[in-house]
Image (cartoon, rainbow over all chains, first blue to last red; front, side):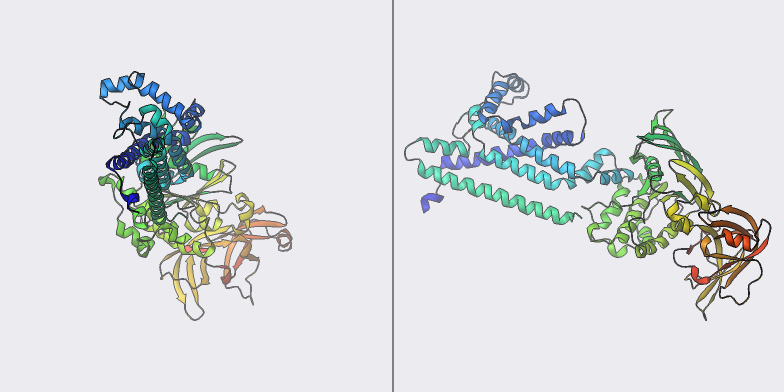
Amino acid sequence: MNWLLDLTPDEWNAVRLSIKVATVAMLASLPPGIMIALLLARAKFWGKTLLNGLVHLPLILPPVVTGYLLLLTFGKRGPAGAFLAEHFGIVFSFRWTGAALACGVMGFPLMVRAIRLSIEAVDRRMEAAAGTLGANPLWVFATITLPLILPGLIAGAILSFAKAMGEFGATITFVSNIPNETQTLPSAIYTFTQVPGGDEGALRLTLVSIVISMAALVASEVLARRVGRRMDIE
Amino acid sequence: MTVLVDISHRLGDFSLDVRFESAGRLTALFGPSGSGKTTLINMIAGLIRPGKGRIEADGRVLVDTGAGIFVPKHKRRIGMVFQDARLFPHMSVAGNLRYGRWFTPAAERYADMDAVVELLGIGPLLDRRPAKLSGGERQRVAIGRALLASPRLLLMDEPLASLDEARKAEILPYIERLRDETKIPIVYVSHSVAEVARLASDVVMLAQGNVIASGPTEAVMQRLDLLPAEERGEGGAVLDTRVLRHDETFGMTVLGSAAGEIRVPRLGAPAGAPVRIRIRARDVMIATEQPAGLSALNILPGTIVAISPGEGPAVDVSIDCHGAIVLARITEQSQHALKLRLGGHVFAVIKTVSFDRANTGAGLPAEADG
């Protein structure tokens, strides 16, 4: 049984990289995710349907297409990619940061959906009450809205993390499959299945995948329950 | 402290055209549902923007559509107690109470946590979560939360409407203490004659988006014809009296009023304390001679000053009893049988047991400043 737990250094790297990519993708998506969810849930503006469609696009398009579009936009010669590299020194193509971007984009619709639903469920009369007590809109958001949507935020974040752990098509199209740089768990498993005698490694990483996903799920359950108990929603 | 409202507002078919000014300790906005009173109080709080008009509180202009002034709700320093309490579910009672303090400039913080907790009797609740409170407790915490933001004006939107009779009776004394022991003027929305007669120093009566009467409570409440149909039976004279003495033998309290002594079931208030009573017009009988052999204990001599048609077979008779007006609702048949006419000398007869908790409450202290 030992071979099951004994990961090679390359495999460990893939695990570590995957967790790093998924965590960064999740954290970086949160602020824009909350903003877009707020806009979609509450603002009235021209082009709202368009924005909604745009956000959901990665959910509908084949991942390869999303990856290719990212390559066109954020690649070395892409408009956004060239601009960011020149002015901020941020390079996406064939780096782990690109993998995080691809994972973040793929998980974004799931995150926005979860947060938007929780924002729509907030009792706006609570916010009005906070206003009459002297809180300006920013304070109302920080002290009332944000705590009330916490369960939705947690759900959205975990969904985004889980999606990032499993993302394959867009990542491999955008940043390829470079060991120690862009080779995440799914890419590593895919690579193992392509070489003779790779079954053992593929199985090991599959088990690791299952463990991490289950851990994330349990963590979100525990967190959500704690928040729920604290809140005692009537 | 005066509140001035002069607005017109259109919402679909409904139009609100209201002008009133009040300097009372507790001004009641009174009217049936759909009369626009909640919309009005939301405008004073800054939750609704009036289509046109002007709102002032304490000389400060809050809204003036002509001049383009609209002070946002968080800068008005006007406390609001909502019908549904609206306590923040993610904070403890203490957290809810402290919320408004944060946002009050230190120099303008006059409310004291301990004093408010004591006033409302919410000490034992501080560590609890809002979901674990009863309706009455929730409403008391909501009042405390509004007070602790040190507001210049306190608005209460039907704070008792969602409570049962027992809970109402539990909270009413706290609102009376609030009115008598703090200096914050209160605007109170209600559709209940009992609440308004008991609490208000001034009344603005609304119907279908218009003011139909306004002034001191005793005067406005005499307009039985203006009361909403479902509340008409509750209408009657409002008298401010004082406890003269208690009659322990029979469990009664004797109140002194301009109209004479009035016996009511034993009250808790000490001798000398102000008590306000509402004498329902339908509880008053009229006799043309001093009655004898009658069980009713309160017989007030007076002069008929007005007779107006009531609903159905009824007429409303106003009797001036040494300066205090007592209203009696009798049948037109009795009016003819007794040959009642203006200026006639009569006796108003009221049973002691017609007084209960709903129509006797603490009176406004005489020295209360407007």
